[in-house]
Image 1 (spheres, one colour):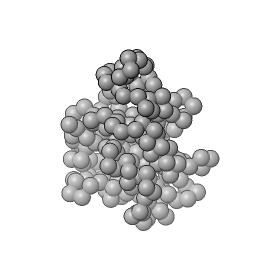
Image 2 (image 1 turned 90 degrees about the horizontal axis):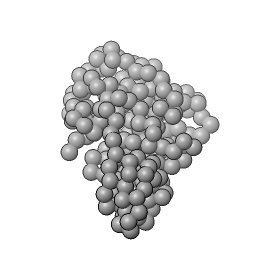
Image 3 (image 1 turned 90 degrees about the vertical axis):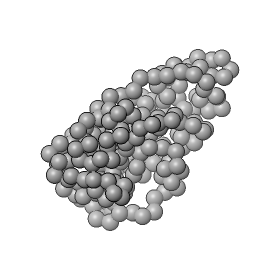
Image 4 (image 1 turned 120 degrees about the horizontal axis):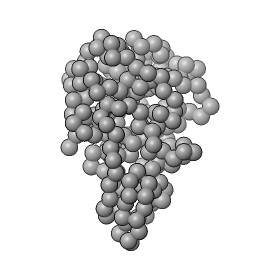
Length: 206
């Protein structure tokens, strides 16, 4: 199993503004043991890690709808900013897509937040960093589209496992801050035809 050192440009752009972290591996297996090894490599340097505890907590296979969560439109195309938001021009928008927000300045509003460790909701974690999705909403949409195309190429069989748990702080101290409120996320996405394994992890607080 070899970790890819160079990822497409969208991953670098996202790393400057988002909270999730990504690691891609080639010539990989999709076994739980291989995934645990990949998670250890994906964690930031210096983070603690208990692979045996992660195996004990286990994972569940989920479909793409559960993986992305309700911050993605039903047709799977558009990121959604859940909640009710007021724009500088006086409009009130409920659950607008990021494309609808392009060129608009949001001045107030709010929405609920998934329970930390509840699982799924990759799209929510992707587009709701701790201090909000600043910048151009279309750029966020474009980053999402590009990263999704790498993780889950169209018409390519994939096994998505959700390792997220409220007990992930027992696996690594990396996850402790996210359990305060923003959330913790840990997914593996395996493409058996390509033997590509992706690890997605996230944890943050203000």
